[in-house]
Image (spheres, rainbow, N blue to C red):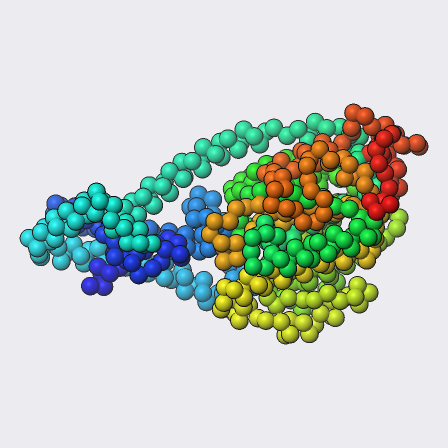
Length: 564
């Protein structure tokens, strides 16, 4: 009975949580009937070999289904054996941040042992069933015949078990066939990617024509973790986030800043943020680890490299990193990389987030923005307070009180723990909405407080949150906004059709994320009608004065503060 139950489980258990219902186990799998028929037909060593290989196949199928459940819940897609093997380390790290390192280690060890046990037990179970069939050949033959007739009739009539699917199941064979087809498709896609890889228009742009429309500006690209379309529309928590964005738009307008917003389609969902970062920077669709690994060992040009060539000091700030990141220098060409170890933080962790977003912004200003005698700065910063598990959350303090972060010491104990929040999906979704509101409020407060007339802020999401928040049918769109004190900066993108304010409406333009790099460089490169500002020249390097070098407003182009 146990052997039969294990084989039945491997054949009929769904690979999605929402299909895991009692009626799903009442289906009749054709693969089981075929296996029984093969056992009845074969004898001796051939039958044993078929049993062993069938058992191994069923064991791998069951493991694949379990992996699918996790990947669909977290990333909105099934497990891909070609490209997903490299995510074990990051998954283990996230699990440790969510439930504790020691508990996570125990879970991973238990999971590995369970996988080995399945691969051992499944062939033994099939061998046990073959011996049973051999001892009762006549009864087994009648059973297979009757069940085969039932299966054919159910298939012909399309008999359904409600949400459990058709009675005549072919799920196991279909899953294996579709996954094999996906492997073939992935290999074809990688060949097409290799062809696109060699085309890099950024390499052909002369240095003196790069980013002329942003000369003299500090440019901050702020990725807000898990900031997806679901945060701003169509959810129980979007009203709260929208209120922060609308109020922020009004506050920034009053301070002389203006903004425009739209959506980008991210290459990833629910996690694996570095795929989105590399897609935005490289202008290539980096949707799996294999592509990422190939990209960061190439000479592909990035946005940060373009800024560096044009004279900006380039900086990366990834507060979740706790070890060296050589690709930051070798591929992205950052002059300086900051992480959890070198920004002087002395406060507490907030689950995954090693520090609050407010401290990340304050440290960047202290270390890079505040010094007066310097080149303009281009920085990509990660705001990770809105990273899973979204609890506990910090709160904003006065910027003058941020200091070394010890002001946040008491906050984790005052918030809800992940173990409490994650008992209830509704609380998970509410905590997500609160975390996004906090991150956005921190950014808005930063811009309003320090009022840098030379700041250009590009704020966007990296991906939608996990399925528990986004839902099963969510897309991959993320909001993006450009904030500036100089209306000429937004005039450069007037043809994009982006909408005014920090909150994109449902009908806002949607671009694939890999299109941003080249469109951005084109918009802020030399314009046909532009002319140098008095005292400037097209080849001048970026200085701290807004009128230094190309990119100053041409005759007829508006200039000055947005609120002026």
